[in-house]
Image (cartoon, one colour):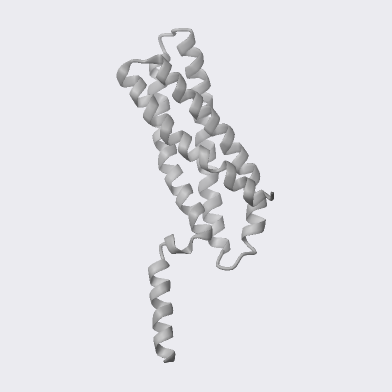
Length: 163
């Protein structure tokens, strides 16, 4: 098992955990259910931990991927830049979630305020998660790149010229 394989194993949970956590947190706020909020906070904390693992395996995965055909430095660099932003948002969300768990357990008056802050941060996280997931997929899946149809059309046209 190499770093690229490890990266593929851990990089999905920050995205999925943030999406599910946001949905559960919103449900917890609407239903005024602290247990649901705590589950969301727990998901956000785990997502932040997995973000750190993803960042830790990303460099090794990059070293392997950049040697593969069709993988450009530009695609990898874009993914890396987005992943760094996403990780920072998740680290902040993880800290806010730790505080939210604590305040919920203590029935503190500011617990609700922190849950709204977590919603705002997690919405930003979900937005970045989509971008990171797409840019990561584009590393090996050239068919989802923005220029995919243009490239295939150009290749088909070049093939027609040769006949």
